Length: 192
Image (tube, rainbow, N blue to C red; front, side):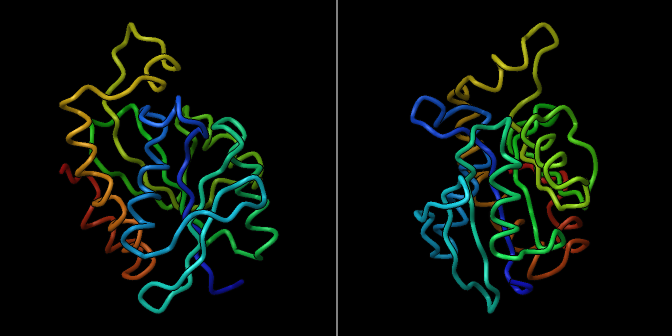
């Protein structure tokens, strides 16, 4: 659908991954689901998703169920099945180069070492999709990346992230209701 906007949050399915840094995208989708009153319970195209209206626009909120490294398969499946153009796609992911709760919105760009984004770029044969990255804390140099993103937040960081998820949800909505430039001006670098 030309007039449907797809917001995808990246993460891994299953309870053991629930509170990990890598599931930040899923948490933002949960916040969006609550704010927009769009339940994310339908299953299809290897994703959990929901469709509804918000501020006069039609949105699909989705959580790929493919595990992080194959996120692009679910994203491509949803886009093809529902005829969603790439300019209507926003991908939300964790970022290990930003402090907890810091938002960075981009119009396009590289995967920046993020395997979920890498697979989406591969599956869509291009990187021209909007993305919102939410900082989960900077990985210490001596730490293994996979171990770091698969850990839960410290108590202090968890409190920051709890405030950050609804703010990131507001930023995601603003990208489509107010425009990318306005959303970037208001939210980029913002710390909750």
